[in-house]
Amino acid sequence: MIFSSKLIEDAVDQIAGLPGIGKKTALRLVFHLLKQDEKSTVALTDTLLKLRRDIVYCNQCHHISDTPTCNICSSNKRDRTLLCVVEDSQDVLAIENTAQYQGLYHVLGGVISPMEGVSPIDLHITSLLERVAKSEIKEVIFALSPTMEGDTTTFYLTKKLREHQIKISTIARGVPIGSELEYTDEITLGRSIIGRTTYE
Amino acid sequence: MFLEKINLLNFKNYEMLDLDFSSSVNCIVGDNGSGKTNLLDAIYYLSMSKGAFGGGNTQHVLHKEDFFMVKGVFQAKDLDYEVTCGYKKGQAKVFKVNQKQYDKISDHIGRFPVVLIAPNDTDTITEGSELRRKFFDSIISQLDKNYLINLIQYTHHLKQRNSLLKQFAERNFVDRSLIDTYNHKLIALGKAICDKRQEFITEFAPIFREHYQELTENKEITALVYQSQFLEEHYADDFRQALPDDLRLQRTTRGIHKDDYDFLIDDHLLRKFGSQGQQKSYIIALKLAHFDIIKNYTFMKPILLLDDIFDKLDDKRMDKLMRKVAAHTFGQIFITDARPERTQTVFEHIDVEKRIFTIAKGEVVDVMEDLN
Ligand SMILES: Nc1ncnc2c1ncn2[C@@H]1O[C@H](COP(=O)(O)OP(=O)(O)OP(=O)(O)O)[C@@H](O)[C@H]1O
Ligand SMILES: [Mg+2]
Ligand SMILES: [Zn+2]
Image (cartoon, each protein chain N blue to C red):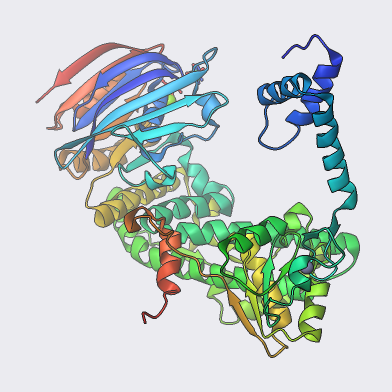
């Protein structure tokens, strides 16, 4: 793509660096911003800058937060005996959106993968073990992605947690609701059979 | 099951090709470099969704072009299946059966099976253990999807463990419980793979032995022995206790990635002591056993692709093989030869329907039908 202006080119390059945005879309966004009042661009950049500067990670669960302790951890409506371990903040949002869970979270910040240089020390594992040791948690629920790395991480942490007298569980994996059995891939279907639930 | 027709566009040295095949014997003759092996490769591609001789998809595109297409119509139980594969440089390949795309291309493998016997096959005997594992893994994976999944997972965890060992060496620190995690996975997956390999060889070896005896008619005692550290009683402890070695060498020294299959003749390793003739007979017997195994499991006779087989076999062995052809042991056969007169002579006395295709520089210049 050829730009007549270096300023436009730089802006396009910056925006196209975001995930899911190509050069064409970036160019459209740039022209959109130029057509708007200057105020709206200032508002956008200010908001982004403020987000970047002011965002903190919760000192309990490492979820993104506006305050040192996030509003989930500081809420008195949550069940403090339940702890759900997830990979990142997006997973917290996803589970919150289900409105099915009232416990607390712990954001690991990734999964163990030596190939990609991610060791246990790069993740929030020490703080997880401390939380479990020091608080009233009775059950830890692992909600990591069903990949080999997710499974490895769950297995590793399960062993570390075993010395505490708590229940350890993982989220169920199975056939998506509304889909047909015959189109479900065999690994998922196999797991659903093995992890079947009693019909009540 | 057989291939009725094939249609190629820009595949290797074929710009355009349209052929109808015999459901019995198809001979492909032509000078060296004319494209005989490439035609077999196209058939292999339709069956296995990849080339037989390695090289990525781009290598299968005609020079100076940017896409290829291979289309074939298989007939199985009186039904036609049109298999289409298209690949354009820089894009993912498209694989369809009767216009319907697969979710996973691996689901295609095994539906229209082929067995290929090619000149470089003796590498399986003479080269390192990796080729022998590959040979059997590819057969077992086609018969057992679970085996394939276990194998993929084992290989993945093995890479992770090896990376971990390197990290430990660099940082001079060992996280025992993380190593234990990988040990646990590798031991469990490795054992499942080992049990399956053992079970498979137990079934495969007698079939192989019979073919070898038949081809050679002599008293040599052949054996096919599966070797694995995981067959030993204390395999799990041995695996764990190898950690000091693993740390020193920065790789996993024990496990089923070290497995081998011993090809023996009279208790001696064929690789080291076998004559060339013995090696050729051995590889052909392996392939014929492969043929039988697929037939037993799928109730289909795989398509047999014989590349330059006349060059490899002496008259006696050739005669044995051709007797099988005459006895209609096989289904559809494709056989290449650079010397048309030799093909003529071989088939003169064999009562089968056959079609002879003469190829020159990526084009078919003559088709001769012989219905006998
Ligand atoms: N991608 C490609 N584009 C064009 N030509 C190719 C391509 N790949 C291979 N070839 C050509 O195809 C020819 C080889 O064809 P092939 O191996 O099928 O010959 P063959 O008839 O089996 O010969 P032989 O009798 O020596 O085994 C060579 O000339 C090679 O350069
Ligand atoms: Mg050839
Ligand atoms: Zn929190």
